Image (cartoon, rainbow, N blue to C red; front, side):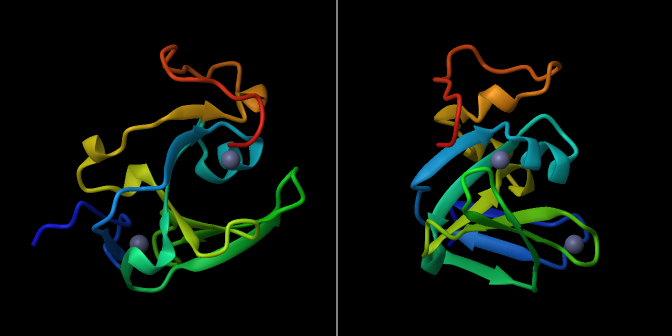
Length: 135
Ligand SMILES: [Zn+2]
Ligand SMILES: [Zn+2]
């Protein structure tokens, strides 16, 4: 059976698949996401961790967000692709970065958040709700 959501890193060392829909999907424009992605925002989907099947092993880097919560970002130690995220205040949930999907059309953002930190050259969909701070 074909998974609802499947993706991989650039080198193919890490693959994932999920058969349930995300509990949250949105674009994070915070400075930490800009820095780690090298881009304007991170398109993030959040799933129950138990429903995500992963092959290969991501390395995690933990940092403290402005909220005081710990945010651990998972990336492929070989090619550097950013795939996953874990949040100290959201136990049992796993974030997946939508740019890693095999079928990018599977990602449907619900809102833009941390827009107060957005880069001056960031371009957002005006039809999506905007939140100044965290989602
Ligand atoms: Zn890789
Ligand atoms: Zn962010």
